[in-house]
Length: 335
Length: 155
Image (cartoon, each protein chain N blue to C red):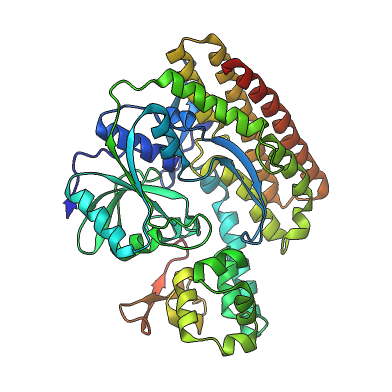
């Protein structure tokens, strides 16, 4: 087994932010996961419904693959990012880097990651892992969701890197070539906050940001007509909890992680107003958590009548109101 | 979220959350999954009923294995289309018994790859043994030959 022994595995809340933070740390730049997430404007909301999806869903973060790009641009790090058409070339490039002792992050379909239990393995192409070793039949991975390093069959990783469908990875991989010794974090933080706030309240797209939350609050009332039966409706309602708490969000739909970023930013920039925003964001996250606990409870009890869904809808409207007020003020504060 | 509110004792499914510590600082903490700890039985029950319902439809000839596995893997027809590289209309045709009967083996292999099953499982399913757990076909190096294996329900 050819393994990079100097790479330190660390669990993280979010796969992409955690992977980027781990690559930076390996290269000598200690940047926290929330800082990576915040600088790259990771916080987001979108309500998604299309024929590609078996059921409507929502996301609480920006598009997979954006975080390393935005971060590099803002802090001046040098990441080599490559996509491939030929799986053989992609594997050869990956192995070549590991031979040189360079850990490489790859985008994969989580369905092929055999170390996860069966119930977690759904087709989702936006997962990121760091490859730290290989032999003839397998790869050693550092997956932020796993407590320790894991191993997957060679065939599975190759398949996961070239899965087709929405957000197809096309063999996307990246590694750190160079990191700044003293990145201009204050400027990067302000840019990250500006972009995130703009995306949440200013983007004129009906299913994005706070508009997306309001759309979600209306559409959730139609979910009973979209579901096959009560079990299916219960499953989809309980998935709201997964999207908010369990799917690599750090809790409260990434809001707790963003509150942590704002607190760190307040210290770095010596700005008390950001510390207040941080507390407010923590409260917003708490309210999202109330929603996730609520949906888990009504989902399990199959208490899914219109009254309950209206209750859920009202909670979502309340979240939209709170985030609209929050991000409008945050945007003004950093202008 | 306060640190104590986030603490879930469930070593089998660990995750990282960001919490407020006693001193007011926000930091990460490793804890167990609340949902898996408290609601996994409910998920398994729903899953078992879904499999039973669709297995019944499959055995009654109301649906084809393409639809059966698509539902079980929670995929939409558009996503399945782009993953297997077949048009939506072709997939819809192969969801009918007559369309399925005329399907090429090459297409069946594409479906098997996306559904994460052996090719032979497109054409036959194994009944649940009375003792719990199930028999599953496991892929071998030969795409046309599978090996039957007993697996526990939780896997």
